[in-house]
Image (cartoon, rainbow, N blue to C red):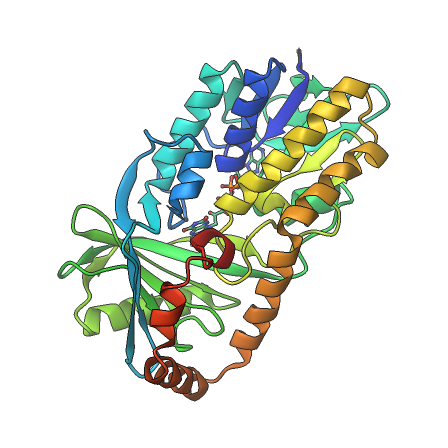
Length: 366
Ligand SMILES: Cc1cc2nc3c(=O)[nH]c(=O)nc-3n(C[C@H](O)[C@H](O)[C@H](O)COP(=O)(O)OP(=O)(O)OC[C@H]3O[C@@H](n4cnc5c(N)ncnc54)[C@H](O)[C@@H]3O)c2cc1C
């Protein structure tokens, strides 16, 4: 059987469902394909987004587990920096429920949501794009345009000739039981997350998410981190960890004939923090404006869809580049250098200056 649509969207993460809803609302016939049979279960993501990002998602009803007006940052030798502002800077969402809610909204807006279907092969020709799935060889999905919003997925993007992220990390996270209430804690020790950071993110019910980013040996690094959290009296116990790839550099090409790649699949992620929800939504907006133009002119060629690549680069390219430079500099620091930097920050009261500067924003500066 062939299902025909205007637009096929592959992957019902935040970016896919957000885009599906926006396009369905505009009257396009949208089919959203998702490989997970059920949404709502745990996702390897801290779910921290800014109030601006919540607004962009029209997310008043999203499942908020906590709200943060600051964070406590630990240096490798245990110095503490308290970052604090007077208003909420970020909220922690239940990422599993968020995915479910956003997909339900896409459905309510008119998108056909098909769960438990994995896109295995995509083929574009002069008249349409066809998505083959693991469902059944004779069950295919055909559209005028397909959007790849399938998350960190080098296999899929490279099979489409769009390359892979040239730089990436591994994220690992587990639900833990806290010993006592704490603010959002960030740990900079290279013992657990060399070149990156680890976190303890309190949720509403005495539990927290403990996680870290690193380049290799994620399981061993995470065990060390959990051991430290237990020994230092932060947590009592930890659940089973989940793992996921995180792009640190966008793929070289995010468009092709009848295809656009958006979100983590495109590597539209903050290289400093690995946060990708806000950037993915911003890129989705760029894609939507290019899609409107493509349908208006009936032009789904690579040459025309390149406009999307230009738009998101204009919107996010500079920040991603600067953030990558900062990441490289940070990765080179030794434990002692990080400790020294902390001491300098405390001595010069830099934190007060930075947190007092309204130009510094969670979304733009991580
Ligand atoms: C440990 C960790 C913590 C993080 N914390 C934060 C944070 O606090 N804030 C933040 O902004 N970002 C965070 N991120 C990054 C964030 O999770 C991603 O940027 C975000 O999920 C990207 O959304 P997406 O929709 O592009 O992709 P995803 O959320 O990965 O969604 C992709 C969807 O596509 C589906 N899919 C994949 N392949 C196929 C296929 N072949 N066919 C059909 N469906 C498919 C997947 O099942 C999934 O549902 C974190 C990442 C990690 C690893």
